[in-house]
Image (cartoon, rainbow, N blue to C red):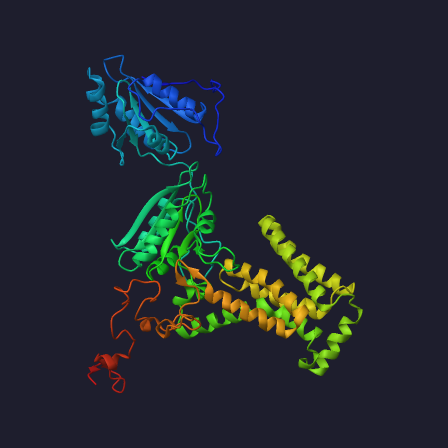
Amino acid sequence: MVSFFKQKGQREKPDKQETDEKGQSKSKIPQYIDSYLKANLDIVKEKTGNSPDIIFRTLKTSQNPEIKVIILYVQGLIDSQSVTDFLIESIMENPQLKEKLLPHEVLEVISEDVVSLGGVETITEWEKLFLSLLSGDSIIFVDGINMALVASTKGGERRSVQEPSTNSVVRGSREAFTESNEINIALVRRIIKSPDLWIEPMKIGTVTKTDVSIMYINGIAKEGIVEEVKKRLKGINIDSILESGYIEQLIEDQVMTPFPTIDYTERPDRVAGNLLEGRVAIFVNGTPFVLLVPALFIQFFQSIEDYFARFDIASSIRVLRILIFFISLITPSLYVAATTFHQEIIPTKLLVIIAAQRETVPFPAVIETFIMEVIFELLREASIRMPKAIGSTMSIVGALVIGQTAVEAGIVSPAMVIIVSITAIASFATPSYAITISARLLRFVFIICAGTMGLYGVILIFFVLVVHLCSLRSFGVPYMSPLAPLNPEGLGDTFFRRPIWAFKDRPKFISSTHNLKREGNNQRPLPPTSRGMKTFNMKKGDGNESQK
């Protein structure tokens, strides 16, 4: 007979418990599970606050009425079908459990003959029990035994694999990561079918116990980088990890920099490509964004689609992306410097037009630029936070209305509207959102320097920026490599992308020196005659083959 241990609607009020500085309960519980079933259930109720989603189900299976079996699980975290079919029904219908058995014999029969689920183990400590319970496993107690069985019944509602919302491509996979670590790891496993793809799980967060897994290809990833990743992750002592951004901020090399030193993506194919170059991926349960370390500056201008297209097309688009980044970074500052200090570099006819437009503008160029940039940033943030149905409409209409109204009111000049529009469009063309934010922040620094020192200020801050970039490291790897320090062999995948058949070696600064070889010799495609193949004799027109 199956019955609920507690009836619906009844809930005992837990005693008021003291908490420590981290908010955790200071109630003392024993380290090991007791053999007395009621004492164990009281501990579970006390520790969980008698929460209604903690379900107890009592099963009477043996002829000995004193022996009781209780299944404990968290509603919403388990697969209900698995619990019903493989636990409750199999225990109730097992003929061996109808006999008069001792408590340890009952537990042995359940563990060996009844539970047909994978991942069944025996535990004796309360800490491991609560961790398994709150991870979606089911706990089986037998009265008279000071241990419990843990059956893997993880389930519940999960988001299915969908098309990525970021890093969109025209040609490539349409699969994106979800919030489940198991699904995300499996998506990468489908691409890299190698036993050398190693995964090491760990739990971070004293309260959340978040599942974090690092993935790398043994023999390709540098051992020093892998060990450094493990060291930094194990050194995290924080109560909660709610997103991979927590991990990113706690393990990055440099804090005082606007540039990202850790990359992230929600595309499995991009993770696979970076793993094959020797990088390490960090999966965090509860987020579809996977971290990639180490990250290089040039990496943020690369798209996974670059490797699916011909090298000449991919190289042209990549050069365009880098040019667009600098356009979004310094275009407003160049306009301010030219109109304020260096009017001689502007063609005379264009200068007359700009001067006529600015005749009614009451603000200097630097203030005018700041006003327009701040307004555009407001529109950008508003369009992101608003519902999708009206977000895009509001941003377009808002930009048109405000721009036109501001020009007619004489607050800004038409030339400034054009400059800010070009800058905005350029900022959207960068494939990485993280590097786009960096350009948005640095743009204001360049505007201030241009408004105070003209082109000299722009050049000065640019050189300071280059020096800063060369000083950065990502897990010990130079951020500007292979440009600084210069590695001629690695320049084939920077501003330009060499053909796929010319990718002889992996990146020297990232991959293991024992496994730099990437492909065999003579991979360049050749015409059939060059390979000694037979061709059709087109002069005869009869389809007969002739050997050249």
